[in-house]
Image (cartoon, rainbow, N blue to C red):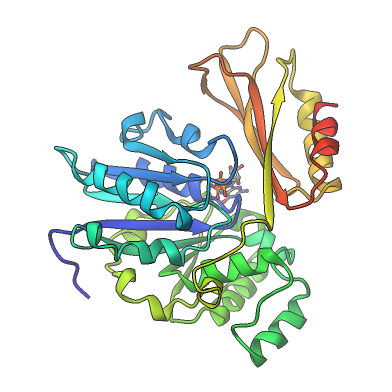
Length: 344
Ligand SMILES: Nc1nc2c(ncn2[C@@H]2O[C@H](COP(=O)(O)OP(=O)(O)OP(=O)(O)O)[C@@H](O)[C@H]2O)c(=O)[nH]1
């Protein structure tokens, strides 16, 4: 399918919490070859961390003005108020972007977002070049997205549109269904046999013939991800969604997030030792944020996915915000207990 020459291509990068979407975007920006790219980030959680991670990260193109953070919330419900005007503002720039990258929240069902590209205000100006679904390989291998993998497989064989008990499974499935390419990320944490098994398992779940490409740190050539010319907004029927059955209306109450404000620490060692234990004890899905250390101008970026944590000094603080961590989990998590345990 050839893309209309005057439409700006937009790539939707989706994938579950912590799968590696922001990491993949950073890699793309690093290898953009001078292309003018704008990024729209939509995040679940009261405080934007992904936008903060990308903005002014030192990669050419990641200057703050090229990165737009959409207000916290469900992109599909704020399409008219937020998303469409944001796109229009980008397209109306004197020097409009040559490509737009959109990072969805890890909990988003991507189809309503793709549908939004059919809105009259933008339909003639922008097209969905492709949907890149980033998958957290080890999390899938650990069975994070299935109540009981065998039971779900059997159920699906009987009725592919069946809802799952596990809300994670539903989001995961919708994100796979929307994909034009699947990035099987965190390949470094899987051996060859596990990687091959996952690749064929994922391939078997996909509703269409879509490539499943293993990656480490989202490091793939931009040519693999951009320029797919999928015009996904014209091809909605091929991308079944749990959202379809709900007739547009959907629940947001499966997941929850809150912010823990941190004191300034002499050393982050004790905090970093506690975090994996807290995440495991409370089945927290995602923890991310920045820690302030006494006497250090640099902020310590902390990223946790399940019980796997990483931290590094990313850049100097540019404001006097306190250190904070955004915690995301399933609804009903004991926020007070988690906050207490984090603060130690
Ligand atoms: N071991 C390993 N870790 C990775 C890889 N890719 C990303 N990570 C780490 O996984 C964590 C989450 O990565 P992000 O890129 O922030 O994930 P995300 O999908 O943007 O997260 P949300 O926006 O919260 O959904 C970070 O600590 C990354 O450094 C990979 O290929 N291997």
